[in-house]
Structures are given as C-alpha cells and as structure tokens.
Image 1: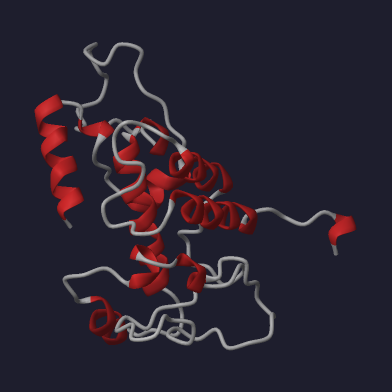
Image 2 (image 1 turned 30 degrees about the vertical axis):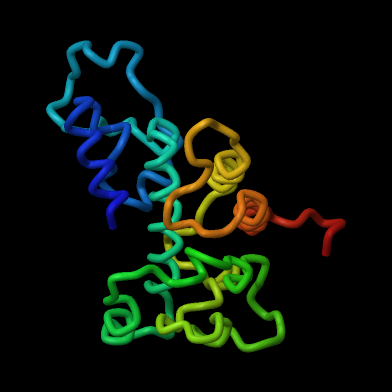
Length: 197
C-alpha cells in the first residue's frame, strides 16, 4: 500500500519513527501510549521505537492506516477461514470495497446469537471478490478487538476538518459515513448495564 511507504519515508526523514510506523498492530492499538517530554533526550533502551508508544503518539495518517489494517486483519484472521482461504481471498493488489466504498456491510453492531447468516462472504457488496463480510460479531472477535478509545478517536479523525485531506486516499466514503461506522465500532466494546438487558 502506498500509504505505508509514504509513512515509512516520513519516519526516516523526520527521524521520529514512533510517529509514523509501529511494531505490532494489536499491541499498538490496545496501548494509548505516551511520548517523551524531550524526544532528543537520552533513552534508557536501545530500541528504534520505545515500548511506551501506543496509537496516540502516531501521526493521524498512521492512526488511520493502523485502524484499517486492524479491520482487515480481523476480517481475515477469524474462525471459519483456513489459511488457504485467507490467502486466496486477500492476495490482491486492491483493498476490499468494505474498506474503500461502503462500511455498512461490515455490520459492526452484530452480536453473537443474532439471527441471520454471519459466515464470511455472506454480507459482501455485490461483486466483491474478497468474501470477508460481515465483520466478526461481538463475542466471536479474535484478539484484535478494537477498544472504545481507539474507535472514538477514529470517529474524531473522520470528522476533523483541515486544509489537507479529511480521510485517507483509499477511503472513498464521506466523513459522516466514516464517523458513523467508527461510532458503531466503539459501541461494540461497551458492556450493557443491568437495565439494558
């Protein structure tokens, strides 16, 4: 993906790799992180990216990419797909339309036990070659479940108005659609109170 290449170049040019790249997607998304008060100060460790770094220290472009990489990983690394299935469905030069055009087919509000088919490929847009939708239901999610603060921040990024582009180049939906999607993703992580049952 071109965005990953651009971010790697920015990491090298700025000499602040912790702002543009990450070591592990899931580890970066679950940790809010912190940055050093003085980025040029001596560090006690000899690591390229400090262990305290989480998603909040990433540049907004990197935060968007991290979020969509995690969505794609969670779509492919779930029960019901063998390794061969995963490779066959995702070994492509383009991204799935559920990430580029219409995220409503991901149906993030689904929970385990709701009626309706939920096998990978049963909720895809017409003509989708990936056959990954819908998103795993709440309760059957792999280890990479996205937490509420991370999703809420994605919602804020989608609504942010700047002179530069408002969303990533691969995201062909409106900022409002992205914000609505990330709001639904954030709600997945909430535990219903006793009165909600």
